[in-house]
Image 1: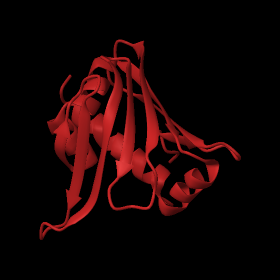
Image 2: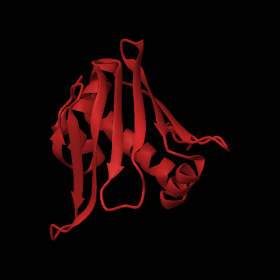
Image 3: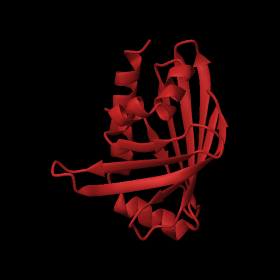
Image 4: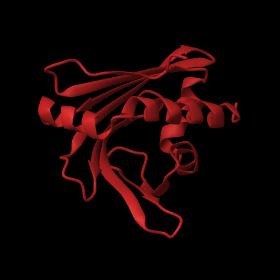
Length: 157
């Protein structure tokens, strides 16, 4: 079965484009990105901080069963327009990768359908390509996470 979430990385470019249409109203799709308890459910990570506002910050952390931290990421929200747009930075703590810039745009298709367009910009196309290699299953993982998002949030209708 073809994944619903599409990841596009054009040769020679320093960005990724991720798109997905959801069987969710745009308000619920947006809520899945800004409410900590919902983010934790579909991302499978702990939300340490999520200030869903302009100049707000965020921090996520994933730990193993023994409490050892496996992954931490953080950033700053630069633009926040409810049900429309989030512009934020993303930085993996303890990783050799530089900060990236993420544009998330939420579009209403109908009362029960919406679309997410993400553009992730890296400092160079080489860094973007390194990230793609590290995250070989990146497209598969994002698709699985978005499937969980749709399943969890559809129960809130």
